[in-house]
Length: 225
Image 1 (cartoon, one colour):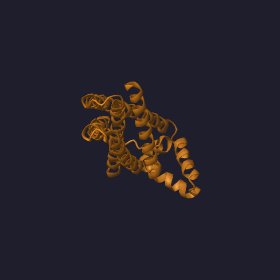
Image 2 (spheres, rainbow, N blue to C red):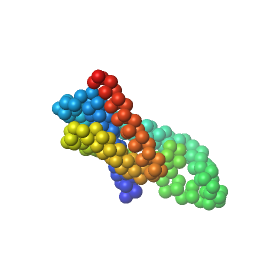
Image 3 (tube, helix red, strand yellow):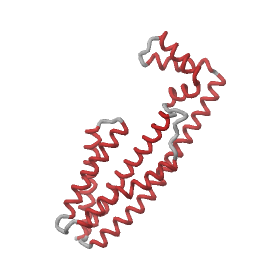
Image 4 (cartoon, helix red, strand yellow):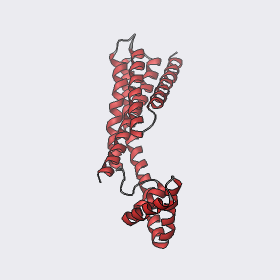
C-alpha cells in the first residue's frame, strides 16, 4: 500500500510541477507580447490576470478529463483480464512466463517467478505485464485537477510580477531572465519525477520558453507599430 500511495503522490506532484511550468510559460508569453505592443502597465497586468484565470480553469478541467479518461481505459483493461483469466488461465500464465523469459530470466527461474506471482495475485500480475500498470494505483482526477488549479496560478505569478514590478527600461529583460530561470527549475524537477535526463529536460524547457517569449514579443512589436 505504501508503494501505491507513493506512486500516486509522485503523479500528483508531477502534475503540480507541469501546472506551474504551464503557468509560467503561458502568462509569460501573454505579458511579453502585450509589453511588446504597449507600455501601459494596467493593460499588461489585466492581460496577465486574464491569462492566469483562463489557464487555471483550462488546466484543472484538462487534468480532470485526462485522468478520468485514463481510468476508464484502465478499468476496461481490468475487466478484460478478469474474463481472460476465467476463460483461459493457462494462456495468461504462459504469457507472463514468456514475458519474464524475454527479459532474460532463465526458463526455470521464470516459471518459479510466474508460479509465485500468479498465485499471489493473478489479476495484478497479468494486468501489469499486458498493460503496464498496477490495478491498485489509480490517480484521483480530483487531486490532479486541484493540483493544477493551485500550481498554474502560482507559476503565473512570476512573469506577472516581473513585468509589472521592474522599472520600465528593465522589465522585459528581467522577465525573460526570471522566466528562463524558473523554466530551468521546473524542467529539472519534472525530469527527476519522470526519471528522465535532467540536462535534456532543462534544455528543452528553456528553449521552448525562450522561443515562446521571442515570438509573442515580436508579434507584439509588429501589432504595436
